[in-house]
Image 1 (cartoon, rainbow, N blue to C red):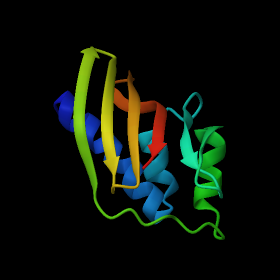
Image 2 (cartoon, one colour):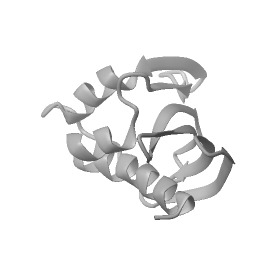
Image 3 (cartoon, rainbow, N blue to C red):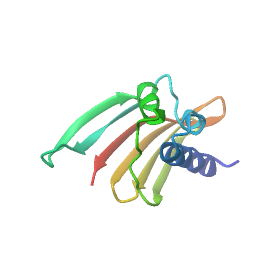
Image 4 (tube, one colour):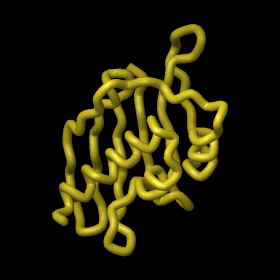
Length: 121
């Protein structure tokens, strides 16, 4: 599989895994032991607030039976930039709700999300 296709597939494993609360898809998407999410989301006052959490912890929250995933509609990859044989960046429109950027790493021949930075739209 070509790198662009493999990267795209990884991003959509995340997007689908989140919506379906599917641990296997989420773990296929992330370099779980090192991946982090950081970004700005709107607090109760509508102000942007910086937030960060390791994906190891976040996946546990997302698959919890009590957790209700946000509905995003369609996700769309805006750009993929492969800058080395083991590194890439992706810009992703998460259904118009968030604009995500992913730092991707290639581990054991598979593309994984190492970090995500997002901005609440």
